[in-house]
Length: 141
Figure 1 (cartoon, helix red, strand yellow):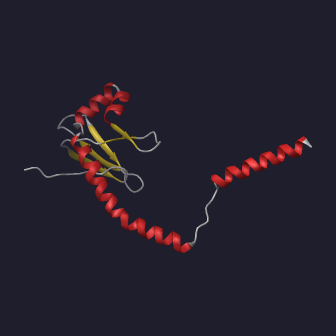
Figure 2: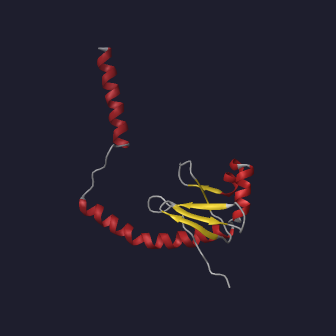
Figure 3: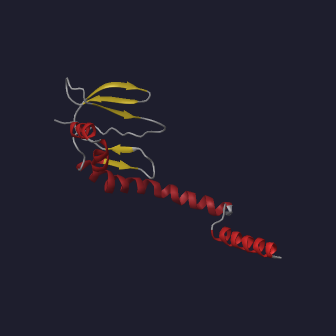
């Protein structure tokens, strides 16, 4: 008898849990396609707003490439906290840097940039999947 009561209670608890947190969600096709069309229309506006509100202000706070490299050599953990940006829950740290350099290598995995003539300080921008690095070049007079 006790065993039956325990099984019924566990079944009721599992049913209640999956009622509020279902493993999958069934939706009518016309509802899903109209939501995707609305989302696609908002994508361009979202990208423009993200660029104007997040990327451009971050460029103003970007450290010089030499400063970042020396900070990473001295104390990588502190440099990651001070200059780095993490995306989601990943362990990868992304950096935005400012400065001038000379492209010294281009291959399938990325672009190598020498920051100063005769210096061993180089930045390698990795390009994986679609892209993880965007190089913004602005011509100077």
